[in-house]
Amino acid sequence: MRTGLEGFSEHEIVELLLTLAIPRRDVKPAAKELVRRFGGLRGLLDASIEDVRAVPGIGEVAPVALKIVRETAALYLRKEGESAPFLGDVGKLVDFWRMRIGGLRHEAVQVAYLDAGYRLIREGVETLAEGTVDRAALYPRRVVESALRRGAAAIVLAHNHPNGVSTPSDADTVLTRAIVRALDTVSIRLLDHIIVAGDTHFSFRNAGLL
Image 1 (tube, rainbow, N blue to C red):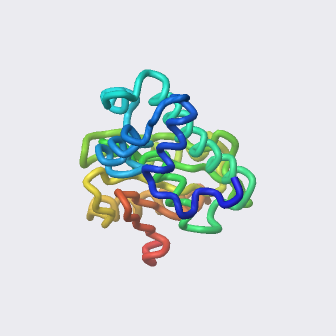
Image 2: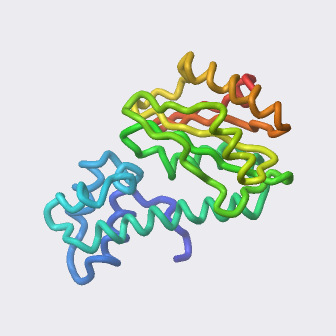
């Protein structure tokens, strides 16, 4: 309580979480197995309830508790975006979408709708496309229609690359340019396009492409 989680190993953090859901039992072996099986804390939190339940000794309650922890963190980041300018820190944008879509096994495209002060509009994140492991079809017209319907002054676009490589494909770049042109016709700004992939990310704005 005094020092937070700095200095704790990942299996020790998982052990603390499991203690809340599985009281009065030594959960250290289970914590180590979860970290080993899912490759770390983030992999564990991104895992499905069914996959976590498949680990011996975990039971029914702990996987749900871990999912609640993850969804609470995602909600916290969204609420933070509603109370402060959303563009202030690319790192926060990356954390936001890594939590939301970074663990998906298929591509998903999400949009954050912002007001004139670049704050996230209430309930202002929407999934506009979902696809396969390496592709999700999105059309500029749908982005424009959705932004107008929400009354957005600006948007941030994000999608994931399940293959772990954050470098944008040629199709990603062409689509981004097309969306910028489409939004310009209705005076809405595309502030950034973020790609999250494992431990890496790509920002079109930071790369000078917006």
